[in-house]
Length: 187
Image (cartoon, rainbow, N blue to C red; front, side):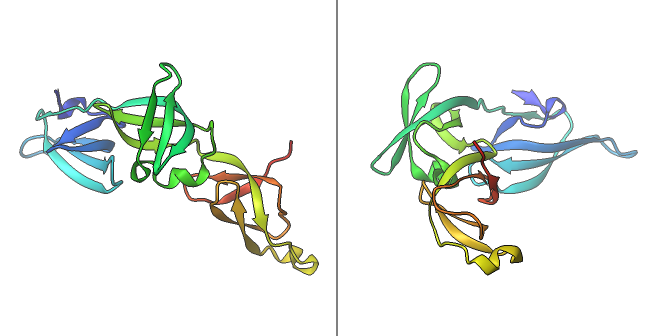
């Protein structure tokens, strides 16, 4: 249990049985009336962002969210099986928790898994990953200078838009947050 005076960015609160992460907060002390805390909260599960105001000094429930480095091992039916890097425990995680991260994960990919009371909340990948293009149309020689894009299938099965000069078998860097092509990887 903490008070609203103790809030910091990144803290996770349990409000009415729902987990919220503090994105921003501001202590306001008006000239007239009592002080209050204006917060911006993000729902940990859905990503919905809301503004909420608390009176200063009100007690709020803190939630313990354990963020662990885990390695993606394999798919077991619909579930994704991750292994804790420290304890070597294996944890099956349903696809709705993994979300869009599944588009950029290969076996042995390291990810951060957030757990609350042993239940997985979300899977977070690094900001970018390097993947090989498994299939793409060849670029037409005259089109290379126009700066156009074409679809390419990654080795994970996800499709991204890449420049026309990218060919099958090349390794590219992809942004895991929005699926954008970031560049070629030269080894």
